[in-house]
Length: 191
Image (tube, rainbow, N blue to C red):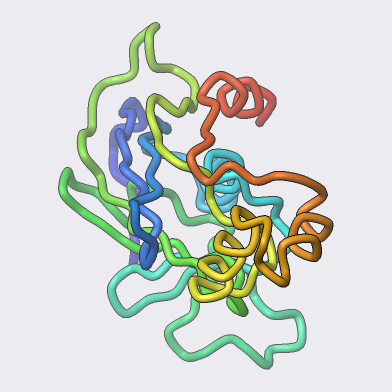
């Protein structure tokens, strides 16, 4: 059984790495240790550029935390509702890691590692993204293989699917694009 830690005055420095794609797509964020998993999910959606169209879950050891299936078809024995679970409950120590999975069809997995735990001060009292590289794949692109095919067609004007993927994506896609300022403006809107 998870129990919340006594102190609620810590900031977690987290490194998020998207698994299965090279070159690496990653982010570094600062969040309160007592952040609940639903809010951490919203933050991860923003920093990765996802649009929250699909289901998600957190893999922590043998446990899965997420939103229960209202019909009860999905929830395995090791599944728990994420609603009241906080980050410091699933990763209480520096060096702890877990996996965030988004879009079970495409299967995007992100390794999240606790790099540091520091006291809250006037410089780090709100959730923020402090670094990152590369754009996450577009929604519904078809997993790692689909993304590689998408990039090949997108950036080769002679590819037979070039016009189709260009139209599907509503224009160009920069796999190296990442705008830290835009991400942090969006994060400031989260309550």
